[in-house]
Every structure is written in C-alpha cells, then in structure tokens.
Length: 95
Image 1 (cartoon, rainbow, N blue to C red):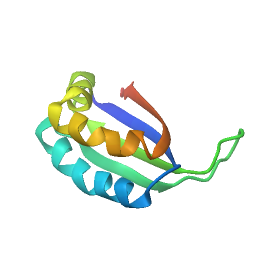
Image 2: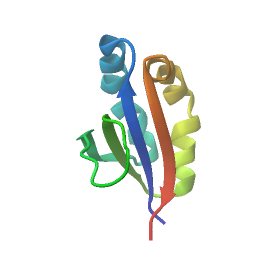
Image 3: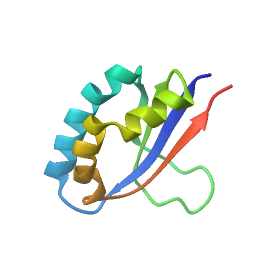
Image 4: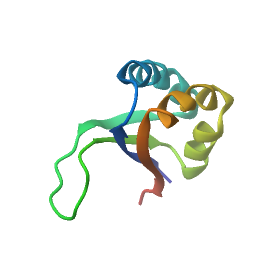
C-alpha cells in the first residue's frame, strides 16, 4: 500500500544548511522508491497554520517510508534540517 511522508517546515536558522539538506535528500529517497509529489509554500485554507513549506513524498509502502527515515544515509543529513527548522513530519498510509 502506498504511503506518504508529509512534512511542514518553517525556517528558523541557516538557509544555506537547509539548501544543503534539500540538495542531498533526493539521493536518499531513490533506494526506497521515494519520489517528491509536492514541495513548496503552502496557503492555509482553514485554521491557524503558520507559514512555511510543505513537502509530500510518496513511497511504495509504509515500511519503505520508515526504512528511508531510519536509514543511515538520511540520518547523516537530518541534523541539517533539525537544527535549522521547526518541522512536523508524518507518515500516512494511502488507500
């Protein structure tokens, strides 16, 4: 069953480090069948959502999404995001 990683990200630190992170993520997705569906600024239709970027990545399964998130390759670059953004990240099973 297809799964999606959905992230909402707000820059709080170094734009340069976040750009480095963004440039390195695609290579970590490929071994797990991940592909970007959306990456960009979001417009809130309802609620008090803070401005920021939303990222949606499709994976072939929930297991593949978790495997990518837990992979050594991704964990190596994740600190670039963690120390420079406030983010919320979810794995959602598709139908």
